[in-house]
Amino acid sequence: TCKNKVLTLVFVLRPGEVLLGYKKRGFAQGWWNGFGGKVEAGETIEEGAKRELHEESGLSVSNELDHVGVLMFEFVNDPVLLEVHVYRTYSYTGTPIETEEMKPQWFKHQDIPYKDMWPDDKLWYSLMLNGKYFNGNFKFEGLTNLLEYEINEITK
Ligand code: 6U4
Ligand code: NA
Ligand code: NA
Image (tube, rainbow, N blue to C red; front, side, top):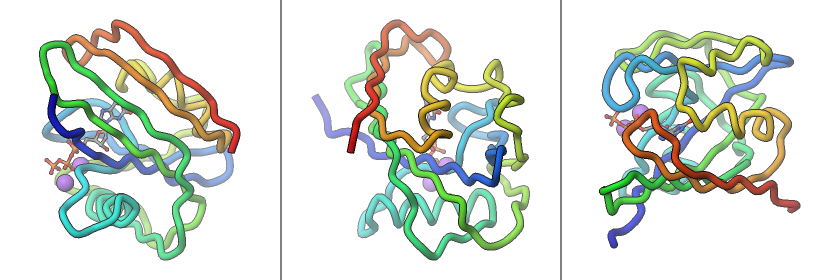
């Protein structure tokens, strides 16, 4: 098998709400998600997370992001595993702006649009929103059929 593809996923929070972006192009177009993407050569995973957050939302974060989870995604008939590092933060500067890739919007926790999101999101967002640390493994067939999964909360 191949090396994992390392990706980041960043959630910006304010009390009772989370900032999501509507993906306008590319992978998972038409779904809401946190901000993130591929980690580039020469940057740490956290640096990649901050860079993608800025590129996709216009927001900047100068202090540390909280690393809250690692999610592994396997796709049937694809040897590449996605290793997604999930971060959250309450502290940021700037105002969310629409970019070529994402249209940002704040959602109250009870209004998160799970039907227009990756099918795994409804399974772990409560852990993320509550600041728990977790690991997950997911097996997909295509982008919409979640065949198997396991999620574990980890006590730090
Ligand atoms: P480009 O084309 O360079 O903008 P890049 O930003 O490198 O792409 P992108 O946007 O395809 O990568 O990254 C995928 C994003 O989707 C990352 O933030 C991780 C996230 N992601 C992938 N699988 C996911 C899943 N099952 N559930 C989820 N987020 C997922 O909530
Ligand atoms: Na991206
Ligand atoms: Na990218």
